[in-house]
Length: 561
Picture 1 (cartoon, helix red, strand yellow):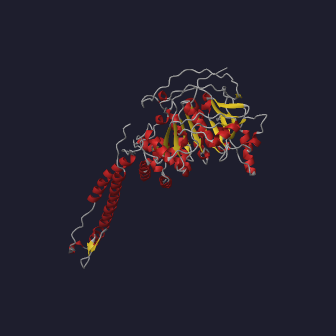
Picture 2 (cartoon, one colour):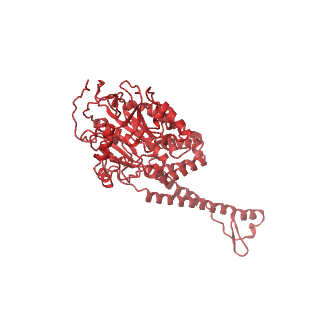
Picture 3 (cartoon, helix red, strand yellow):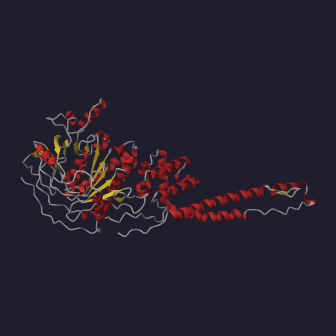
């Protein structure tokens, strides 16, 4: 029986006010079928149309939007078609009115913002596979870039990143991570905002210089741990991390937009340069996922997801990750489903993903794996064991035989059960396969709903400015006390009545004048001079830091949104 097709009004552009879900509007679904013989319907009734993902001679394989928030993974060796599969899924979600976020590691996903076109080569391939020509069309897209070069800048504050993710970014051990957590707590207790790297540097120096003061309340602060964190910040700054931390911070609502036709906006993060710093890349995406989890309300079961998040090169997220971070990832993936968010991991081998996370990924697309060594063959067998068996298909043998664009597909049915693994060809996208040109990128940035919102950085008063001002006000008082303590030497007259034991003691303490008129310092005079010199050096240091802070930390007015 045909799928019911409820009528829905397609609204125009929404204002930037209201809740994030007020901006998302579904499209009219099309009549489709799910994993049924070609030409037959299985009678599934749902508001959002099933998404045709792959097809073989016997069946069409559909991804059910209501099951899309049960997460999934796209796996396979390099050059087997993972990127196109990701593009097909992102395009389908966008046409359903679902906003999407994905990282563009190779620089070729921006073509999704341009309409595709037929070609003799494509027509021949579609004919040989028995596939229909796709509906050509572009998807609305917003370009992002941590470095602000190929898209709108993306920023987060140090406080929002938190000590756990920041410790991962800096490759800290448990002791150093504990000190970093302590620094965050001291900053919170003292009302010191941690917005950018210079704030964290100033806070680390403040805690290190006053370690004895914080010992009884917060615990030991070793100079070695503070130094290790400072070195990590230097390395992070050299990788360009200083451009990521600051304000204005990314507003999650700006990722969850639809266009005038009700199509979900595809958010594309330029990650080709970011991938040169794998830990920064992985931690940034995990921060985004955690932010979604913390800010979105509970939604329960919906006819389609509210947002879909694609995590390319997912193995970087789990490589050498501490247990505390792995537990955090597992928790987010497990619980974010109830907030109507689908998470899809893209990597070469499903074994790159921990079992606790892999077991929660219901929708699976496995492209070809290569098995040239005994180790590779073992990996292929293990990957095959993670798929639902098909009595008529040797999955382990088939994985190594798949061609480009061909995959083993297992999708959840309407009851949430994994479908039997099928060998099929992934359908072609209706958008362009390949990168957008420089002019097309520039046009996308200028027409974006967030154009001009994030381009200008803002540096407001925070921990660095407050600590610098506090040190600057304390230095003159210290110098004044030291100046008052300087004794004035007694007259150098060597009277006859001053000799003996008392006269010798006076000379030792206050100094004396030699027979040729030379002056010899006493102990008290020498100590006072040393104190003044020390106070003057400290004052000079604080004044220098204050001058540099005023030059490098200039404030800019926040942008008007």
